[in-house]
Length: 393
Image (cartoon, rainbow, N blue to C red):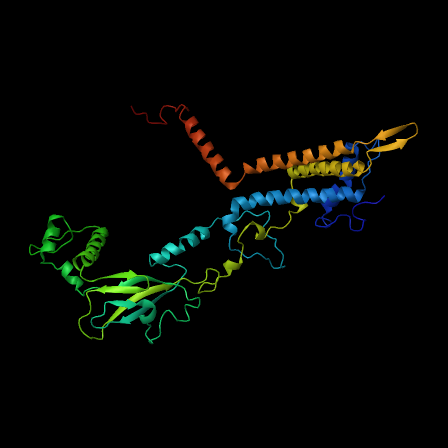
């Protein structure tokens, strides 16, 4: 009698053929399926290889559905990771519980960091415009140059010739900052009234938190922006207009910091995560090992194999609706088996998905939080023995 282990190519793909537990299960599933389909009374027109193929398909279907929900729970953690392992196959992450990280959120926040001058994905460059007497408007793309006198727009750092974004213009009237903190100025005497840190002729010293200095620095910045309103600029299209207009030919320059938007798939630095996991299709999930599937999963696989066998047997018997026999015709139940098999497949997939939907990591967090809240409510009704608690009110 042929068994699974001594049969050549027993399954179409052979993913589980070398697992001893799958081999044992395959021999038993033949008996299970044939008896469920009435083989002891009427011969079941299915070969062992056909039944083994349904067992393999059921195992693959079970693993695929579980991997889908694992990806749904942890897609954020997998984004950017290499999609191939040491063997060059897209596997190795199935059945693992990955560590949480904030890479996704950090990457999303990078553009904001760039706008705030605290990181980002794009480089900033500084250049200058030579000011001329009686000229108020300057074309940034034709006049903004680096220290070597080359146009920034035509720089090798801007290969795509993208638009320049101005981040900062160094155009203000010079003023010594120390005057803002002068110990004898009127503003310092005003600080005394508000208990700011200060030295006065009365040698009174106030020790205050660091945020006082931060507020004072902010006041200095506002003073620069409001009181020096005669020094300003406007950017219109590709031109910048400066106020006031230069009145004499000098060697002064207007310095500007700009940023180029490079190709998002080719940033100005080496980033292999761009070629890593980007969606559900390239997460390195392989097939679950049958040996590691517990009794819950194996029973689902058995039931799904039976449903597949019903569908397959229904297709076979549907080829002939009736078979002539002496004195009458024999009507086959191919249509009933086909309908029953499809319905059972649908129900099994639906039940598994509904169960897994309640077990995604987000749902588990909600369940744990709800349980903690219920426990907290229950503890309010637990009586405390005298001497072990303090009652107030």
